Amino acid sequence: MNTFQRIFNLVAYEWRRSLAKKKIYVLIALALALQIGIFALFNFFFTSPTQGPNITGPFLEGVKGTMWLLGVLGPQGLFIPLIAIIVAGGSMSEEYEHGTADILLSKPITRVEYLAGKYLGGLSLIGFVIVLITILGTVLARGFFGPQESLQIIPAVYMALVYANLLFFSLAFMLSEALRRTTLAYLVSIGIFIASMIVGGYLSILYAMTREQFYLDISRWLPNWSASNFPSFVVSELMTVQNSPFISVVSGDVRLAAAIIAVYSVVSVLVATVRLVKSDITKRGD
Image 1: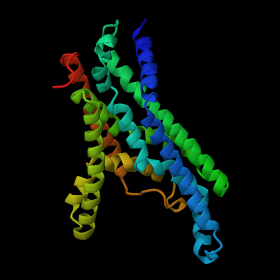
Image 2: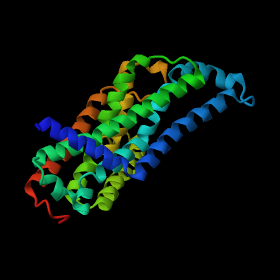
Image 3: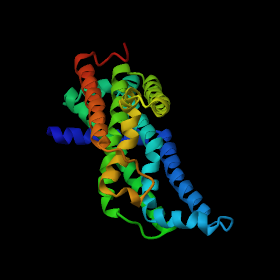
């Protein structure tokens, strides 16, 4: 059995391990329910007889062809990063807690292969979840609002979503290996996610009030900024602004967001690798 076969077996194992968690199904169900709820709400608003045509008519005509963007990008603000954290946050630590890390690494497999299989297994599962969300968002938009525009960019949007979620997935993966405590890894990862949203919001308010570039620069380096906005920035590069109000447009930010995601992800993977290679595998936490 060669390296690729061993890694593939670990990828399949990681899928089975992750899908055994009920919390994964709950978060996926909430993400899909959010999509359905958003479209049902917009459909009710646009078709309600209490709304005059002067209010909804022009707006609906302007956005109904790109409503799929709302369904596809909407869950990225909360549910997809949380799913990534839940998948990655227990990936390494649970093996120490259950004592299976010793068993797995007693097989003819290197530690780097072990880490690669676990990482790629979790990441491919996140990619599959994003496929479901993307398909459902597009189908719902077509069903509620008719033919959709610019569907040819869906593959690029999908890749942008996967890339954006590398950040919190890699961060939680690193914490899972470094802390070797699943609950602690979850708490720290989710804490960073929530704190970056809150602090980023305050910094944005300060920037709006003072116009000091310093506040904007700091907010951009918070992990949530690039993870949440990168897919929207990619869409803005591929579509004209007039096509949809559901995308963010700030010139040049797509490159900055991509670079920040790369920095967080690469550093996280390197730290996890060093921790695994240099430490005693039997230690559950230091």
